[in-house]
Length: 389
Image (cartoon, rainbow, N blue to C red; front, top):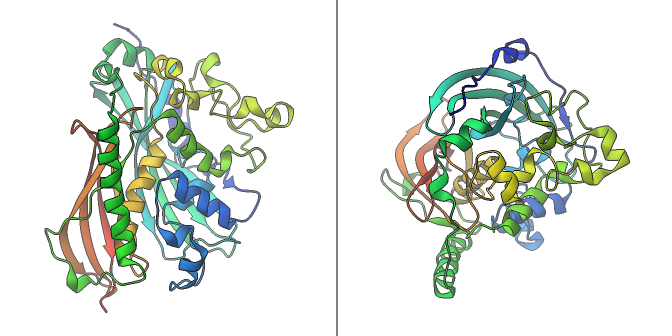
């Protein structure tokens, strides 16, 4: 076993201090919204079908509530992974979101203000001493309206310890699905799509739902390198020249070994050889798409993006709420990633109803995300506003 310890002391000097903001160069376009909905496998016609959206309360295409994270240059993780932890790697550990009211449309220019928040070290079965670090992202449009606040959690650990402890070895074999099983999955996935179509422009009224009611089951997958790549390309920062790149980002200084750090999001290298800055091929993010590099950081095979899991959760809640409802708050904890070959199954139920001091009619829902074996991948709890009439 490794005798190394997790030295998190460098984080302290960053806490509470604003970082360089995340800034896209161009206003949001309708195709950015469509690409995001497609990449997150969210077939809500409000986000891609012009004719349907024109008949909605918004009168045009609107971005999913999950879209703000697509406008950041690092999945919202930047303020949750500052400070050097030597020889470390990280995965997403969770996201808490507060939505403040304004929605995102084509023509909006989004910026993200970022401040590191806190961290704690705990012992885990995954990698021994593990740092759970949090940071805040606040998203604004170009009119100064606050759209959403995201408190992101990263899990930082020694990759060597994760490899030696081997807690994910049981997930090393990719399952094989028969054609009949795939057809059955596709039928179940379409059942969920039909629930979105059935609601259409209608209202899901607060008075018509009850504690104990279940939300429709949502299924993703089987996941693959192709599906993860589609998700990756939905994030605007993966496009060459799309962002005002950070000049204070040094992945090697954060603890990544030189061969793992690469030049991801490097503004100087982007002008010289942009392919070297693309995390799909080089740098820490390639572990998602290349099994060899996944194993290097203690993962058994290709694995999905934590920010995408967070988007799946927000989309699941908002899709059920319909165009007249909205997610107010969601708190999700990620326990394990989606691996290639696995499916993801989402189920939720209403656990409370209330009217708050602002007169908003709210339901609280509890959600669990599992794979085909019933292994819990994430849990979430959210407050959703529904119309009264």
